[in-house]
Image (tube, rainbow, N blue to C red):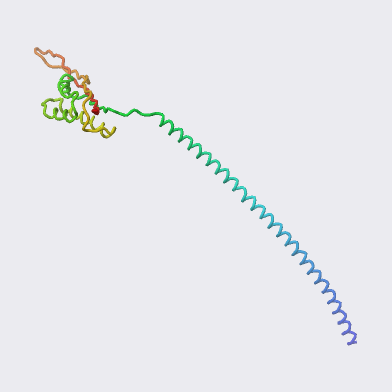
Length: 208
């Protein structure tokens, strides 16, 4: 009985081993098939990724090219505009400035009194005119001297004239403000009074 039991156990073990071996073979075959499928999937994914990357790389290049073309067109347009402006400037030749002006408005002096001083200076060199005005004792000498020096400064600083060659080409005095007041007179009466101001204009030129 013991021997028969042992033989039955051995047969059962051999049968189980036979059953286990094909099962293991099946699992290995399944593993190989799954590994092949995963490899195929990964290769397909890699290919799709590469295609996407290539398309993404191509797209910005085209955009960059378009931007570069637009910039180049803008630069060309700007250059053309600058060239047109330069041509226009070359065509328009500004006349050289030969005189400088200055004016004093509402000077507290009557035009008649101012003309007495102005007549002394008209047509003289500027330095000579200033010397004359410094030596004349009159109310209008100070504003007239200031005005002539202002015209000289305009000529030298703004128009690059030679200060030594400047002379008083034109000088005149005209009516300015008129303040109307009254003077008390005898027996409670009053008479009119007009306080006059004057405007003085000077032009300075360069002697040739």
